[in-house]
Image (cartoon, rainbow, N blue to C red; front, side, top):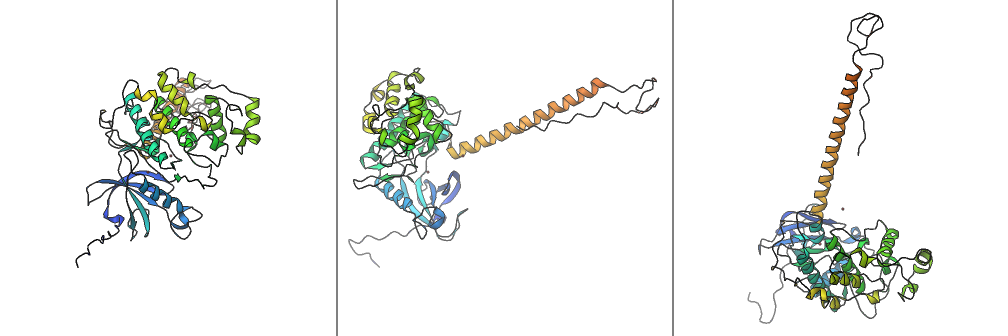
Length: 416
């Protein structure tokens, strides 16, 4: 039947089984992220499962779709930008054919990216020079500026959530913790942002905050790219704050006017700060770098959120107008990797650790055996007082002497 003029035909929802799975590229609380091929377009895509119902862990999702996923989809449909991951579709597994899934599971379909920044930094063979660092920082800030202008806070910026392709194009991904801001917004949770990238106000339980929390995370990512290791790798919240104070100094109500209003300041941190005040050491720690590099890092890692540079201001910083100039994606030599995600880097590192452990065990076993043989040879056969050779009185057996027991072998044995 001919479609009526002016009436748009509704596209039938696709089933996830239409995609050809190629392998896992990520894993989290929600499940596995799969690399797949879309036979309709020939494009590579990433399939991320959404946990629904009680299994999602969301208190408001016992009977249906979790509100966090509703937010994520709504935000991703709003944010269309070259440096923000593109949500292509939302599909369902109608018959439960996906590995590890069940009938009714829902998947978000994203454009596929070859790597993430975390995976790149954990791959020694990939060289990340200052041209790449400047390009990645510029792209990150462009995407973040667009996001913040649209009143969205990401709340989980880190290397694993910055997706990169072989041409050097960076896109911000994983909006599972993102929130839209509005003037009637009530209290927010402080339990967001991965610990190493979490700003001090959230560690002090702030519940009213804005886009400045993302800018602290950008500073941590910038420092990590410069040093190739995390700059604030705390084991827990206590140590994380101590590391922050060691780098950025301890706050006072004068240097950070809002600190006294934070829930954990008076009871937890004020006594420690008074007892052991610390000076800011950031400039000294990064003194080997160019002045504009250090200045941008310094402006990002300000304890007081009100003093932290914004994404718009950061894009206008002298760092991006200094030599070398910012190069657009595709203008730099292609990065030398085929696939390089945090998930794969962790698998590779686990295999390397297992191989090293096995080699250490083999080496220790060989050393123990060599010591045993050397000890046996040094003792030689037992000679009886009567000149006879052997274990009995004047006997001729080939027995070892009473002190010749075999020494015990050492049994020491040495993560979209």
